[in-house]
Length: 264
Image (tube, rainbow, N blue to C red; front, top):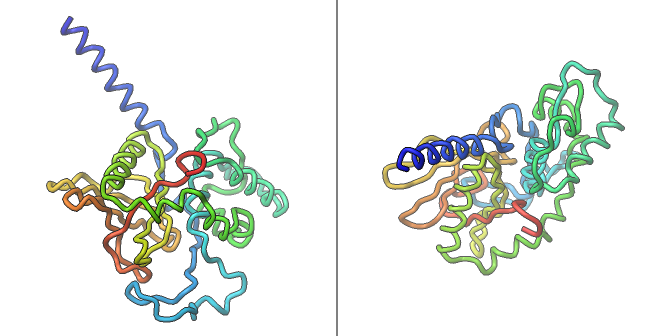
């Protein structure tokens, strides 16, 4: 009986390990599977503080691309789940690319990944980063509107879910999501302070859990397409911390999962 129990437990462990590696985030490569362009800020910042209500470096550019952090994190997940690339086939014209971009980004991001044979094909490119670099403006016009994200029902949790118990549950859900090999799109907010109001895509652990229990995560941040950024869970404080940058002073932020299910 003991031997049978051990055998069954071993099989279960192997199957769980296999399942954990089967999600769409498995094999995710930041420099291949993210967008090459950036979401730009409306305001100008220095050391995380607003120094002007006009972004001097961006305001004179035509077709400024702002307020799209939710759109861009969602798009990265959608392309990982519903698209594939065929670099050896002839490239499409812009009209057909327009249709295929919209076909991908109109699919609900919480749905299961499509099998390869049913995915939307983008010929002539090796990956999303290469294609988004070659067709930046076309992608920006066709992956979603920024203002719509402000009306998402899931955003309203920032007004009333402030307790640390909710953040503990969010951390548990984040761990479970990564264990399944899936993406966790996070809405970051420190309301009512409003130092941060942003969306990032968490795709992997950054090394091992620290001795004090701190968990470290790698994220795709639409404002910073050049390299991954870092989110931490601090168990002693029961809170998340996000990496400092020009737009954010760094430190405390609440995390709310979005696009994990309908109406979230």
